Length: 411
Image 1 (cartoon, rainbow, N blue to C red):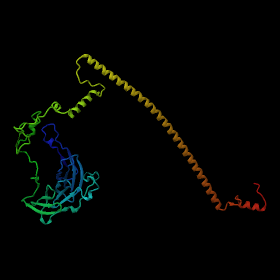
Image 2: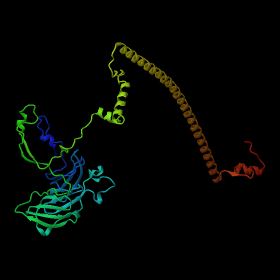
Image 3: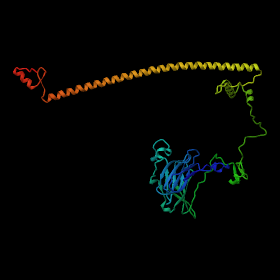
Image 4: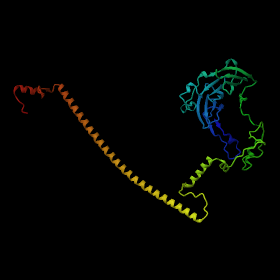
């Protein structure tokens, strides 16, 4: 499992602070060999974990989601992330390395972030064997640690034989052996680059830091910071302070009233505040009670007249609301009558459509019956049961013989 912790909660002196993990990431079936965290300072930062089950999982550890799963050819021993978080490198027990690119040609479905594409999060990916490289002639031994330069061009690996080797990331080949130590190299780390122009140097240096004991913090009562918590530091340069001179007059800030007096006209900020205040005087509160006047009356008559004026305004508003209610009721009645008429028209048109469909069905059945009768008559004439005379009448062979003999059929 991979646990994600919040440092403010761990370092807090409050006794009621929860010190449990924020997230617990579980996707591996064997012990985890190494973890590498991304370089971003945003909520899109990622982490990569490699395990003895021959898998590598890319995590969004802010929400505990597994973004990508890679099936590796062997059990990995170390992992390092690219400075731009576009790829990661894995080391194996035979001394070989492998580069896995998040945005290679096989994983580009379109103009989307393929690393966070939901369709590929549940589909494991097996990298190509061509991405794996080694230096068999150097007898390096098992690779136990990895570190990548700040520009992502050089990869350094530490091996069980004590060798520290540099690799060319672009060409995926061996460069040189930097040093040969007497024991296995368990950790390799690049230092942060320095010497850039206009880079900010630290303004202080820590000398002594006395860390408190959590047990002492619990016994002090309500105090969040326990006693005997001291910090000694020394400033390494000049502090960022404003310019001060005994011969120059320091600019003094003026109050708002003084700015208004010296301004050619009223300042815009003052005008906006005044207009907003005037608008709030005439506005009524949400519960229907008028806002109290922003002044103090000097006599009783003025107070009575103000109260009477307020009541008159409320009565006028009530009458206006009643008129609006009557108008809405009238509109409602007209609307209901129109809906009733539209419903009757709809029923009429539906009945007419049903009648038309019934007539069309009857007409189709009649045409089908006439067609069947004509087909039957045609079949009978072709079998020789019916013959046609010159005058167009249907006669049988017996009737033709009787006509020749001059006799008639009384039936």
